[in-house]
Length: 67
Image (cartoon, rainbow, N blue to C red; front, side, top):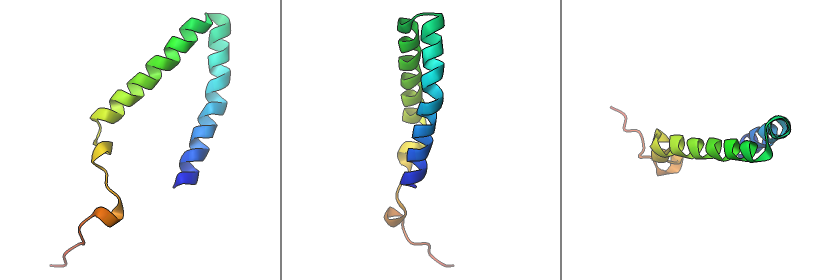
């Protein structure tokens, strides 16, 4: 699972860096930085209110009781 997340992360860096560079070149670097910051804040807010915080590891779950 860790390798999958790491691969996805590095893939997004490879996509986001040229987009950010193009945006900074066309508009301004300050605008590009504010857009990146606002995206990170929105992402953090979405994760804060999502059910992701309630997730537990498989070994923390109660065993399934057969009926």
